[in-house]
Image (cartoon, rainbow, N blue to C red; front, side, top):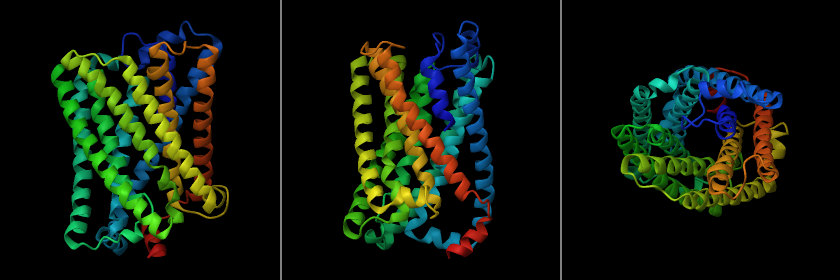
Amino acid sequence: MAITFFIWLNFLVPHPNTPIITFDGIAAFLGTASLTAQALLFLALFGIIFFAVRHLRLVAWNLREYGRFKQTKAYATLREGQGAMALMALPLMLAMTVNVFFVLGAVFVPGLWNVVEYLFPFAMTAFVLIGALALRILFDTFGKALVSGKFECARNNSLSQFLAAFTFSMVAVGMAAPAAMSKTTLTVTISMFGSLFFLGAAVLLGLITLVLGFRGMLTNGLAVDAAPSLWMPIPVLTLLGITLVRLSHGIDTAFHFHIPQPLIFMLTASVLGLQLLIGLLGYSVMNKVGYLRDFVWGERNSPGSYGLICPAVALAVFGMFFIHPGLAQNGLVERFSAVHIALLVPVALVQVLGIVTMLRLDSKLMRMQPATERAVATA
């Protein structure tokens, strides 16, 4: 959620000397901004801090509880079953955390951009290690399924297995960041190769798990507890779309081939349109089974309900990419015109809805009970 506030700053606060907004750009803007603009800027900074702290606190708690959970029989059972793909949540969380640290450094550390070229290799190394962890989980899980032939497609009646594509797309977008921002050809080239590798993994696994998931749902109906997984393709599409936008900058830097801006409009429009279609389809199905009524606003509880947050974040983030690189940079919308402001309203509403849902789920689900207790309760 912290990323959504950063995106507002990145697209609305001028930063002519850097590819993304930085502390120095914010400081320069504050000196000339109106009181209203300053208030909105501080609101965005508060949002970044609040949700970054929340994220890091939960990361620490999850790592501690995961360590305890690994000592239980439930963990061994999970690893041997087809639910083992849920372990992909660990590298996904770690990749998200690297992105959060990147945002915090850019926005709150003065002069960081002066040494950013030295930081890119460390960032890429982190994503390679996280990607290696994800590959290890994938090979272990899929390898067992392929060897044993005991994967029960009928029980796979959700898109929960799509988590693998989500994880690899998160690694891919992180690996692509230096390609979009570095001025060093070697850094850009390595970044592009690594990003394309994990992008390919995300697309391949996405197609496989999408087909398997819909086969299971069409055969046995949706597993209601896993209904939020219907929206999981939305964040994956956001990550893949941003990855391609970043790689287009890398092509320009490393190979001196400029991608025409209208192609960026076609990319962002296609991705956003597909996201809206998936969103409407998922909402229709969840409405039919009463998921939002029962699990968000009602008394029924499921940790899987947090899967509703990422689609809201993803839609808000990619909405900004559609409005700015897609429309504004093609001259289709004038910045800060009435049309521009009107287009920003639904983005803000989706963001607010995501925050409200997150806080509602926190009030219901954040009991901080030990992993061992949960394992016993669900065994």
